[in-house]
Image (cartoon, rainbow, N blue to C red; front, side):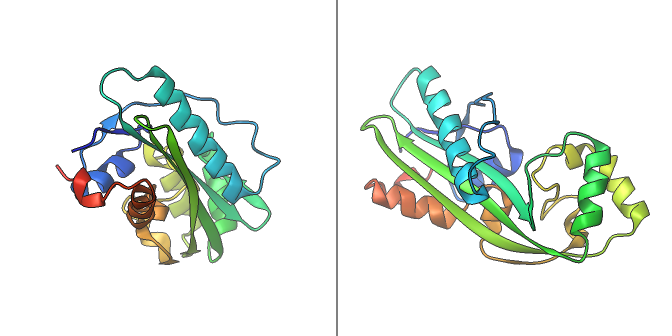
Length: 197
């Protein structure tokens, strides 16, 4: 079994990998996420994922690892959102999102430290939002979850009742597309089954 390092502190990403039989070692990148505003959102998340993965790779010791880094962003009309900075920002975004549709982009970066081979890809899902009341939005904005996720929303948390549907990969919305990861591993000559614990 190859060593897998997840360059993210996201509990959802770790849970997705573990549910697929993988055992990631978590190393948070702590990189600056600015400087990508000039890029389209689907390119920005790829660039940020690459930045995170390379930063973690530079700090790793021990056996050569496969390093996976991801970054997510919601594109909603002309807006592009990662995590909200305040409850007020959560309220503003949800008032815009309710009843609408957005594109959730997740950039994936995979580095095989043994060979130096890299793969960078982005997957996109369409998210249709329900219509929470102002009171429900304000209640959600007061939860810790609201400041910890891109959008801000999740498919399995407190905002889940107001996600009407998604078109695309569940994992892309949650933080890592397992099907895309399988294809990236295959491009490196690593079958997904070799990553199982």
